[in-house]
Image (cartoon, rainbow, N blue to C red):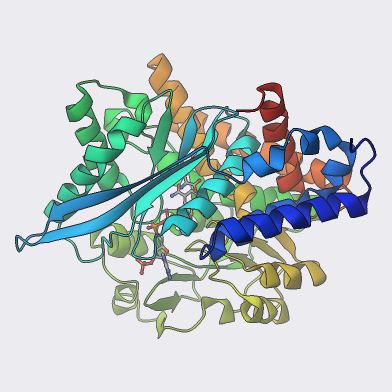
Length: 454
Ligand code: NDP
Ligand code: 2IT
């Protein structure tokens, strides 16, 4: 059966599966968007590999191996009981233990966690670090909560989640709303419940207690390393050019830092209240002070930097620049924003966030021959460095900052090259969406094929 798949029959198999996924997962538009993007890319792979179709690889890939939803009750500072919902979606473990971050944000629901977990399967495959894909989180909103409230929430969250975790089973890390502070409380509670100091069951830990050098910087740095590779292939310089960056969290701050180290001039940052523009280049120490130390809104930056301006609401993509680094959240850059960027002369877009560009925006970049790096490739440096943290924990070693950064850079070069080569092999040279999706899909599919129907 299926010995000779044509392009048309391979597309029709994919269309049927996409329809089936839509029917089986109502009310989960982000998950469908992520599935659609991956499956759209892999038709040329199926033409060559009818054995994947016969083994039901795609139908199995789009169904998580395990999904956990749980109650997270906690008491706020006014002694009122609050109830949130916790999630962990263990999507695919063909390549290694489940690995992926936790997101605490009011918008979190099952569909969001499934989209993130699905993306994580392919991203993790690209890193070549032997890690499966997962994601978790809660609809808890940390904004404005005291440290004590954050701690009580994290402890209650871990009271349920711990039974599903372990260094050989499932290893979480941070994502939106989960940084060093939350990881500390989560890790501490896990230790207390299990009576084990199992360093490798969480990544993104403080460097003083088992964390890896460069993990904090890794996602932002890695995104810019990927950008550097894309530009080098086209002979475009990074040095001296302007960049618009969205977000002002972990990914955005360290994307800005690496852009500056490489001689570029990032001129924006944002949060859900609006964006700042500083034509002289962002003062990173000030921005870190505002966001990481004071945990204030991004507008506080302009109070101490009179040459900069704050725009409430609005779109940071209205600011003209050569490069765009969306680093806040999904679907933050739509078709209209993409057209504005193109009109203003953007030459490359690298996704620091997960799925920040809508499919229509990606089409605009593609038509305008703008270099485009999809998140599952461009932001893979975060999880790749998490895997380096796991290696160090397992071997009780500590690698220096510069050694770790060299390893991160080498991984990002390899991620770039794999994606580029696959884009050529499957007939879309320079299309990194096709390249990243096909290169990673083949790795996961081969592992699933070898391990039988499970
Ligand atoms: P942080 O919580 O550190 O920062 C998130 C930033 O994005 C904040 O400035 C936040 O503003 C803004 N933001 C979040 N949600 C929204 C929204 N709905 N609308 C507008 N702005 C929003 O998160 P990270 O920097 O860690 O994550 C940013 C992105 O990068 C996410 O897509 C994440 O999945 C992805 N990513 C993260 C990795 C990591 O290692 N941390 C690894 C790979 C990808 P505000 O405070 O106002 O909400
Ligand atoms: O989206 C991501 O890759 C992350 N939030 C990081 C996951 C990890 O396990 O380091």
